[in-house]
Image (cartoon, rainbow, N blue to C red):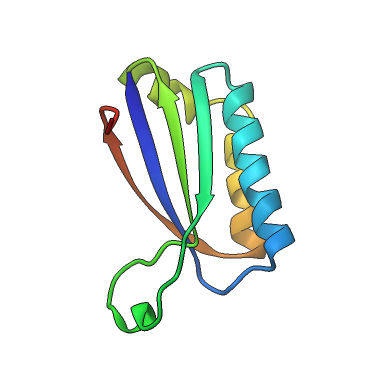
Length: 105
């Protein structure tokens, strides 16, 4: 089992409803791929002063669980995923960092 953890950082703050829709769209398209076993998304919890840190600061975290690296690769070629990414990138640009890892607990 592999977890793919994404750190999503939008260039500008999003209204809560739009962030919720982004997370729902990503969850739906990944689950619909048939290669993802589960999806968990959480909002970043900001702390005062973090904006002064020269690092990628998350807007949200999204974690997909897949069976293996082959399933992970196939999930990102599934129909619809790039349309969702492109649509959101065009409306609200964002950056993504990620890590592929074994479960942390």
